[in-house]
Length: 193
Image 1 (tube, rainbow, N blue to C red):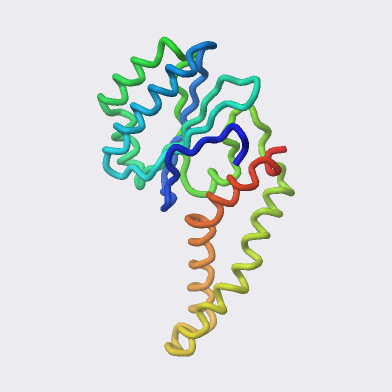
Image 2 (image 1 turned 90 degrees about the vertical axis):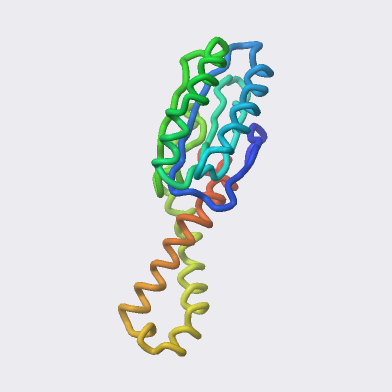
């Protein structure tokens, strides 16, 4: 993570639904905004399906904060976004915002290579290729090795087609829910440069 990143609470189990919220804060209102953020986070955590939030401070020269909100389902996320509690809290902070409350909902793979700051460049295609390949290549060695004892114990699972189905499902699952959300944050400085 870069110097402008503070993780208030990172989801240990990345969720299927992510909301990216951007707030451009008026000059001199940053401390009020951050106090408000702590208040709204405490309330959001009480809602069903809440999986964590990442709070990203603006890079130098910007006043746009990014909040990455994780929920287990779209229904739970929508319930929070349209709740009376959130509506009241947004009304409370609006005087300190320029451009209002900007909310995007993202699911699955599209979030891997989407910069957290709208002012950043998008990841170049060759960098996306290198990052994805650097994860998939070791998994194509590791996953079959881990599953090999299972295939020997249950011969049906080792049949061509069946084993490929299990191996590819495990690789995609690890890639989507475990590795890529963390890995892309780790290499964000290089990825979006």
